[in-house]
Length: 116
Length: 147
Image (cartoon, rainbow over all chains, first blue to last red; front, top):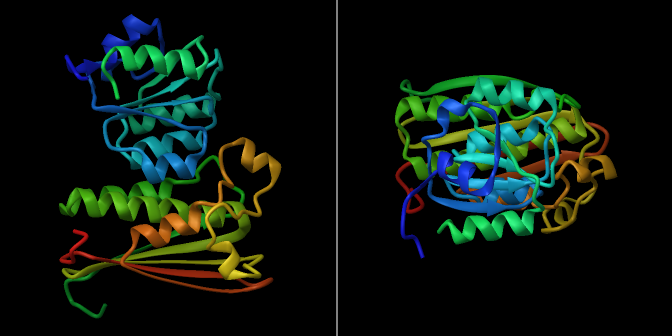
């Protein structure tokens, strides 16, 4: 159940995320969430405004997020995205967050925040 | 497609260039957004364009993506020089993929590309010859029921 509209800044604080790109977008609203490491799955099935949870950190994730107008990307499991990914994120204005948690635990926290 | 009001543009796609992969699709999306095309149609075109572009990047040497926009429809053609597809029926089957292990690790090769294209376009055709290349054509109706 959605009790409150979440912004990127809220989940950064609650879930202890790190922002690697585009902190100026942290007021972006999150309308929902999508988790997958398969790019065709995300491009086909995510919705605009979703926060995307993945362990992929290569540059191709940026085009997917841009084309689907996602709210941002969270890279899990303490992984670091490629440098090229961050460069592209800057160009396309896509917020990149990282989490130390594995996907399952992070998604649980996001769900508790009311993101679903 | 001979409408005077038609807009058209051609984008080059380089095979194997994973760094710039997706940029032609982003540009097409931006054009559609600037023209003020309905958001749901933009979403469907973006999905189809991205999958078609990635297929060129993954399986061909080079390709061209042409977009034509007129008041009735958006036409997208992606033509490549590359290995081609041996069995189109098999390639259209969800889950079937010839992607390498490396591509799969990057989240490609789910066997959803062509099915995603078909599902999101109003008309779709594919022609291919092995060792030569593949040609995809997609039409998105602007005044249709999916709009």
